Length: 398
Ligand SMILES: Cc1ncc(COP(=O)(O)O)c(C=O)c1O
Image (cartoon, rainbow, N blue to C red; front, side, top):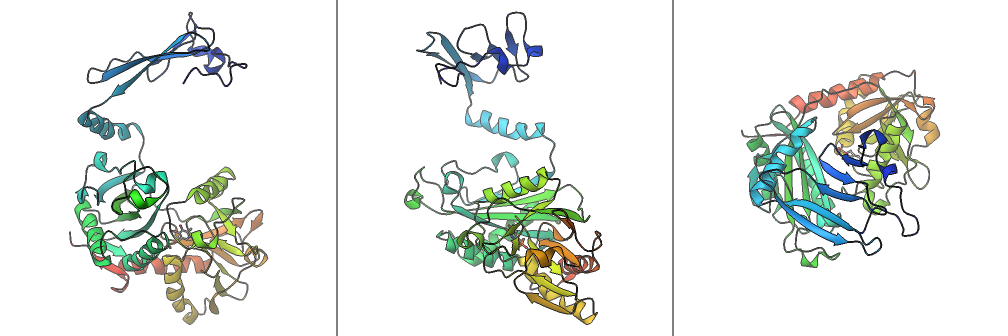
């Protein structure tokens, strides 16, 4: 790096980069993290660390700027492994946390750690530098894993679509996941797990990745659940093509941008439409509606992620037919017009469970309040998580 100017002919004003209240009489500045920035030279900003932490070994590098004929001094600490681990151990404490990381399994060290500082993955893993990985989740409820096998089936199907060879057979992966939850002692939280082409090099081809990797983490959410009715908007971020929408790969950039778009508009989520303009899904949830004649409808799963929660809701909703709260349950095409004119709209997923949508763009859905079917379906799912059959509840031996 030569200096902080965008081009030789157009130098950036040095002091314009720094708020004037932070400048002292010699136009120097000490930032909050003790980076010393001198602005006394004509063309470059000189940066050096004035902090002299006793355990740090400081590397000083002097670089000549050919353009300005002046010098820059870089002074970035180089840590030993134990010093780096200590930094990793203490740095998260600086930030307020909404989630605690209780245990991690890594096939790299072939075991489980409960030390968050060791919950790291190799930089040269294909999942990191090429997004070549898949993931899935399962909720931990009262010491049971909810719908573990359903999520595991989707996980392995995603891995197959991403051409990731399994490092272990299905049964071993399942056992590792259950043991990781057991080691965490967590009885209520979330399990997330990843399969990756693995570490090896920084090439595009995974041919140098010597072994695929499995990672899993147990997370405890410390914010209370919120079931208030929410607003959604139509996403302007394009939906992923079918091939990528039906697998749960780590390529969630469109999903994250879509969520950010919603937040910028004071909404909870942005809804994707498919190539034909039909309702598709949210960035990490499925969508369902209750029509004017009490039909529960969900868009087909053929171009979107096959949601485990949505599929379970379709089964549990049967009891609402018997109670005459619903007339029919159907998976079919849903137009935007029909969706916006529905009696109820809801988001369904393992994160949101079942959440009523009370406004979509400018349209108020139903009477603008949480609908009775959404409430009933959420209660059914919560009940199923707590006392459903063994096909959806796997006990964790602690
Ligand atoms: C894009 C997308 N659609 C739908 C879902 C809902 O799936 P599930 O109910 O299995 O959490 C998710 C969540 O993983 C998702 O990421």
